[in-house]
Length: 128
Image 1 (cartoon, one colour):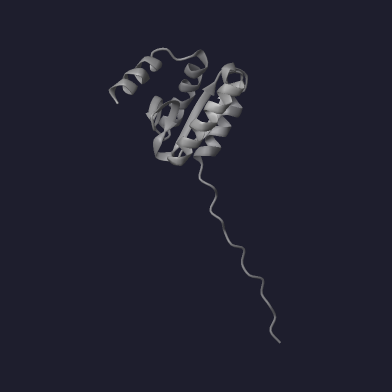
Image 2 (cartoon, one colour; image 1 turned 90 degrees about the horizontal axis):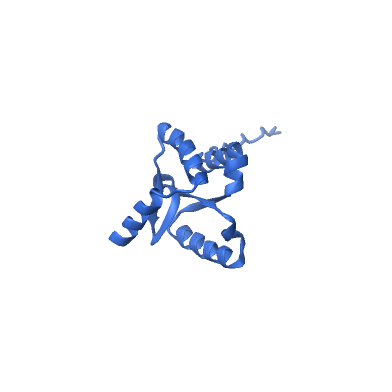
């Protein structure tokens, strides 16, 4: 366990430029009552960002994730995190660089509980 915490600490000290950009935005979510952690250990993995109370993981992916081996690893990882109750959002580096508004909108949607389903009133029937 200490090994994974030490590795997480190393990763926090060597974040990619895109991770740094997104972390700066996630701090605004923290100011709104969420608690994002960076390079957080979960289930034997170290995820880029996690909001543990909402069971949300955010990954910022470089090009290596686009190849078969990377996709296979990501699929297995996402399934294992899913089994622990976590939803994983994945964003490409280019999205963080060029579409931060879209990234933030996706994160906001994932953090926002679905609107309460309001049942429509039954139509009145005339009895006669």
